Image 1 (tube, rainbow, N blue to C red):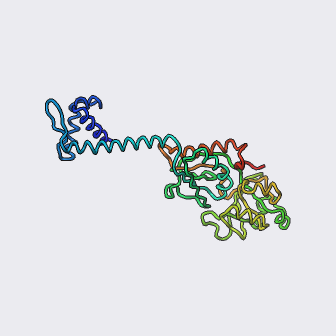
Image 2: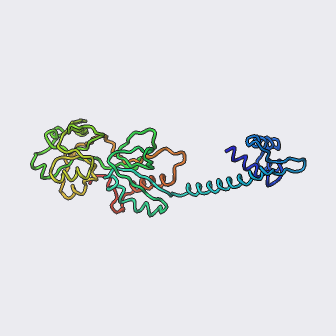
Image 3: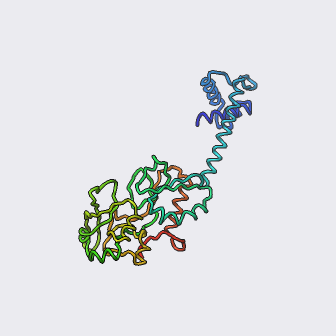
Length: 316
């Protein structure tokens, strides 16, 4: 910044042909201006200004420096104007990451309105079943279920989402008998979601919280898949009992194609925090595209009524 200030000072000296006049414009004494010019000449090893008692004239090298400095300052001023304009409204590429089911059930119904509201934003939506490092993958915002607890990242809770529920097809339950307590699941085929490569033996850990307190069970089954749609389809086919957020299966339960299991118990493979969170890098000055996207989602989830296909936040 000191170099840019010296450039601007030199341009003012050339325009006014006076060290004192330039100094007054910058709030500097003539002696301070002279010292800065001397330092600049020493840096380049060439005289830039011929000084006389009556006026100051640029040398040939000074003229060259003036031309280049004027162009540089004009480019910097133009860039500052563009950045200021860019900062004033959301624009540019916005890279968002989410799980497949979150993208399908949650983001898809909301994105048309967001893109219509902010036409200068281009959205790149990346859906995977595994979390991705934001910095390494150039992700602006990640939408996650549950607090991941990453202290180096900014976290914004958007809403309290639906709980996870156990469910199975009526046919499966008719063939395999009633389930009255979490321990009954130990004799059932549990369709599970593998977490970070764990439970390669076919087992998974499900936690329960309900009338009988809190419990943790190692359940097992003949299918593990890291995709909510496939777990739902397997349950619909009568293969076993699955555990997913209620919004993944609300339609099938309402239609009677699936039945909720142990409705008086809360169940989860990870955490009982069912919140929806926006995760992004900490910014001293948050880019408008990120701020606009996060605020839009927060408002949409606070006021879901009247939105076609809006994300269901609670069980019926």
